[in-house]
Length: 151
Image (tube, rainbow, N blue to C red; front, top):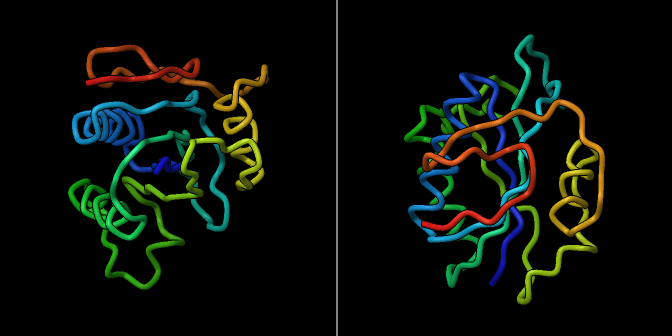
């Protein structure tokens, strides 16, 4: 199964997003990554901007098993998922599964408006993105254009 997922961070975001991408490549061997953009917080009040990106990963895991891996990664980065307000607080790492598809076709997937251009980019459309930033996971420059990362 192919999974469309998002990464977000607004606490040391360059460090946490870059590290998470590297850890995901190590764990799954390969993923397709969108550009990385800086955004204002959505659904919460914070003075700290987020870094956000989308990725597609192929995995034999069920969505529940995959989410379990993502929660463990979030916790390893310092997120307190036991806090009932963790969805509205600053966070070092947030990884969500947005959609799944057996063939990896996410052209009809629906995402939050601030992620729509990233999804279009992953689907091969030419888009103009503002707030792009570069990261260096796995020793490679990523974030300013979609690319496939392999272990």
